[in-house]
Amino acid sequence: MSPRPRPENPADHPGARDDRDRPDDGEGRDGRITVAVITRDRPAAILRTVEALTALPERPPVIVVDNSSDDTTLDALRHRPPAVRVLKPARNTGALGRNLAVRRADTPYVAFSDDDSWWTRGALRQAADLLDRHPRLGLLAARTLVGPERTEDPFNAVLAASPLPHEPDLPGRPVLGFLACACVVRRDAYLRAGGYHPLLFFGGEETLLAYDLAADGWGVTYEPSLTARHHPASGGRDGRNHLLRRNEVLTFWLRRPLPTALRATARLTAAAATGEPGARRALRETAVRLPAALAGRRPLPPHVEAAIRLLEHAR
Image 1 (cartoon, rainbow, N blue to C red):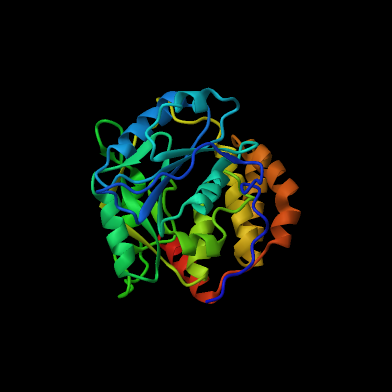
Image 2 (tube, helix red, strand yellow; image 1 turned 120 degrees about the vertical axis):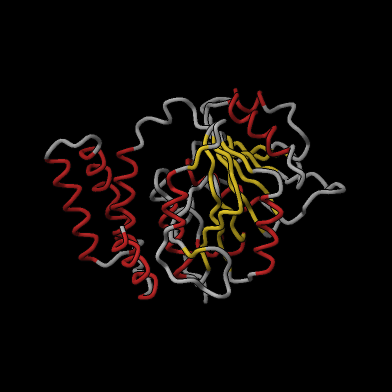
């Protein structure tokens, strides 16, 4: 299936600098997979993540996209292992930094981590094996264990309960969602689908990418035998509620049928009128971005829309 054009991605800044040349592969390295990490103003967290990733038996190359407001993170990573490259965009790229990292990767597969997450031993090799064996597989969503107690992320159960029918040429369970810090992509599929959409920037951006991969004919599956670790900071990140609500509605306008998008907008409008936390800001930011969403609107093919409706009915 031929790729569809996407708007120019602001993450691909010509001014972004790569402060280190690509290292040569060493003996024992699995040369099929790169790990891409985005970080912003959390030098201690990214140091821990880099240490965990470079200690893996696969010895993956790691690309860190530093969205920080100053060079503190860059300074903290100055003595990193040679397999780690740091990209410093000209401005904060949000989730779009992952697009920049994927474009710089030279392996067929790319795994993602955030600055508070990493992969368990052997998971990357297993993911690469699965992608090798299943040429239509575009994205693998992994099981996520949270904190030092390794508790199950609640989203694991959501993915495991997906009602989408089994596809014989794919491993795992078909899904249309994943956690950005716990997935592995086929690089070509990711780039053909356009990566993360620039209009969303950050917050719930995974859903649209899953839709676009499926629309381009790629499989998106949950494979619980792959495990990622997530150690979020105490209290988590504040201020994301309005981003999630905004991007949910924008995703509807970008890809879903018009009546569905109108209903989602009406729900957000009603929530703003009753003073629900974050709703007014989400509605205001949605209105500002709506002309761009309409300009980039590409309704999904019927089989993907049918899969979404099956998921919505199950919920």
